[in-house]
Amino acid sequence: MSKIPEEINKLSFEKAMEELAEIVENLESGNIDLEKSIEYYTRGSHLRSHCQRKLDEAVLKLEEIKVLSDGKISKKSE
Image (tube, rainbow, N blue to C red):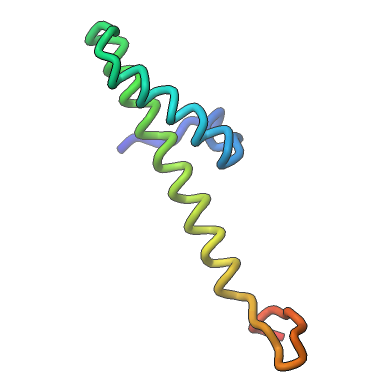
């Protein structure tokens, strides 16, 4: 897998998912030529990797949170 382009790295999770959904829709339509299909597939692959990384980062942040007995939220390291 090649390096994710910087323009994709700058996208929010939501924007990347939106674009990925459009790419999937276009690929599933079957109305595009082979070269465009390859281009879409490559970009979609980068978008998927970007979204997965964003989700992994969110999970790590959530795992750092703990709820105290009084209901307050704090970081586990505190």
